Amino acid sequence: MPDSQKLEKAELRELDAEFKNEINTDKKCQVQFNPETLKVSFANQVATPSGAGDQKGTPARQFVGAGTTKLSLQLWFDVTAPMPPEQKKEQDVRKLTAKVAYFITPKPEGDKFVPPAVRFIWGSFQFDGIMEGLDESLEFFSPEGRPLRASMTLNLSQQRITKFAFRDARGPASAPSLGSRPLAQAGGGASLQGLAAAAGKGSDWQSIASANGIENPRLLQPGALIDLNARSPL
Image (cartoon, rainbow, N blue to C red; front, side, top):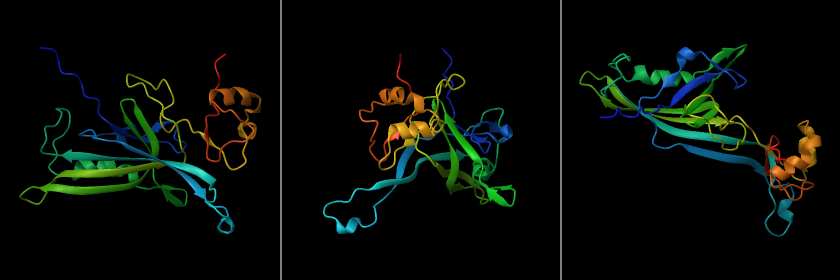
């Protein structure tokens, strides 16, 4: 009878302040049970122009700042469930959930405290951000009053909107993952030439326009997402 296929487990890993390199690898946390769903939300910061109330019809809204990408998921931990041979058997589920709570605990940085940068990774899915919310519910207790089962709802965010890409689950990422390749967002009256020039890529604006399917590079739709790293094939 063939061996059963190994189940890939989701992990939480700590990143440096620039969201580039993984640090403190001893704090890496592998989940006990993979989440059932991953919810990714995108939001733009928009505002109604002042004086719009004096105009007839629906006033146009303008993009006024960076967008936000958020990830929500739920994890379960249960000390009564079978554990891998190499993992210590715990009597209190909080011994397991404390490894997740580490990623929301602020750390001293100079004269202030900041939460650690965190990477959620599961197979081909990767999200880099800050854990802005964590809810823990203790679900089941022993006769002695020890919590044995818990659910945790995690909310991670990053202050930008990024395009979907896929990580190679068999090894190092072969393409930028979600959270690693930000898109430029056009404000009211913005042109592609201007965005490209601001990013130091002014000479490539025609190739960028072609790769993004932009028909009018001189006037972009407010809030449009542009990949300034894209180039049309030769």
